[in-house]
Image (cartoon, rainbow, N blue to C red; front, side, top):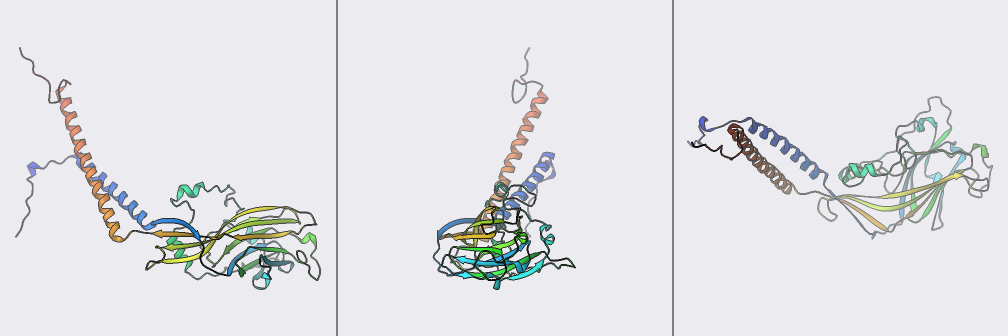
Length: 355
């Protein structure tokens, strides 16, 4: 039977300082372990640009817009650079609704401002996220993007008189520069039939969703949950969008087990104001597609490398704690001898006087 030798009690000295250092090292080790685990779980994001090599002729636009006009008084059309005119109204859904059911919704804000009316500068995103984006991590985006997306149901009127129209759905467009616009009946194109009375114009609108590519409600786009109210009957809203094809990948593309989704991001600027009766009021989205591809890749160290990092971090913390304890113990010992001597001539004690 093998036994291990233990130190005799008279050779073991228990100190209050040693206990405090032990507790401190346990706390520090736990903090370092948790931070290293969080960094490993989050992974490292790399953003690279490249020329888009994929060839595709079509692109989807997903929209969910509420306008403060009746559905029968609205026309939705798309005119692209190839000359094609798409009657979007035939492919989109229209539901009568009430304006107050949408403008009172939580989180609705004006473009460039948050739900509290404060100007969005982007500084809060940079301060709160190492990647510089105020969105979820790539692995969350990819996981949510693989789920089947559905459009939300239009709220019931519950006896209210419908005064607005919800236009929503997905359109398949040519992948070229284009203009997507919503105008009033009898305005915007040479059409037969009665023109809508100008006093019925009200292009106030709430944008719940506006995205390009696959319908991924989990991704937050610049125009999502924005509201713009018209100050006159002849009011024209113009949004200029620059679309950038984007790929999100967990793991480097081409490696086994890599999961990816393809979508589009965009930047937007707005110009709006009152117009004369010689101009066409409405909502116009002018979009252009950039010939580049943004690759956002999240990579993570293997479990073996992670364990090695944890061992190194904890070992370094324990060594630093040991030397800190030895140094503090030495300082306490020296300070105690100086106080007992009552003098400061020597480090080992006061000199003896000889008669």
